[in-house]
Image (cartoon, rainbow, N blue to C red; front, top):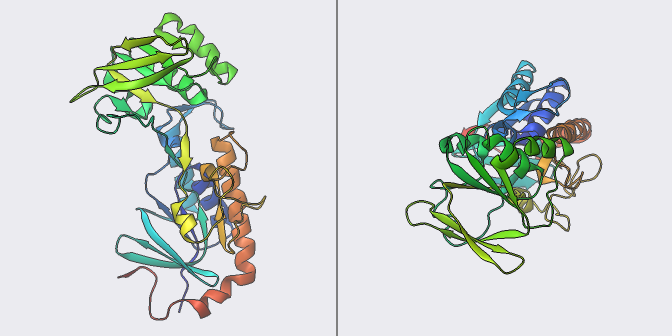
Length: 325
């Protein structure tokens, strides 16, 4: 039976597309499956720290990578992988009603945005509560919003939102804002348009059919009401690891996929890259994600040269790649 794909990459963000470009250059037979094209980068707005571009829209950067991978004969499809199984050094995944078999897999699945975990938060998501300024910021043109978070992503989000809204309240739990100096400088140039509330937390989200106001709690014990039209949450993310765990892939102490310097997991033929791993700690950037993808693809290529023929023996007989279940 012919093994059509040498490598399947799950995820089409910077890590997945970086891996696709390198594996394509190695003349591997590659399939990229992305639930949401471009991942978080495609929704990030202007990117100003990716080498070679003084400034480029995140979606445009991902689209350029996609076109480069396509030039190298990498196949890409949209979809969500619902299951993955392993037999010896060979794998099988399901996407809707289609099954694919392959030799190696690279998880570039990114991470899911963290929520505040407050009552009413999920009910009001999309009705005043949001997690993507690029996506939903323009909805609040001329209005007042709050942004929760004290890191670089929240500062960049507040600056971006300020292009549309009349006022941004940046709600920070800690004593200071931790962001890149250049982004802090940009925020300060906006003056009172962005008001930073330090040592403050959102305790309640009030609203029935839509967000009406927030109840804030300060370290001093003071509680205030803050009337806003929208709330954006930028407090980090949790890695998407469930598929990897189903294969027996080990996680590190923080719940990320554990990899070595070659992006190899504890399972032979399984690699991971991007925000689903913690290789560079909290420093998670497009350039590091793409670099990890390139390393993972190289490792998969070297592994395929040694073990590639094994799949011809161990795959389930009679099931063709892309067959309908």
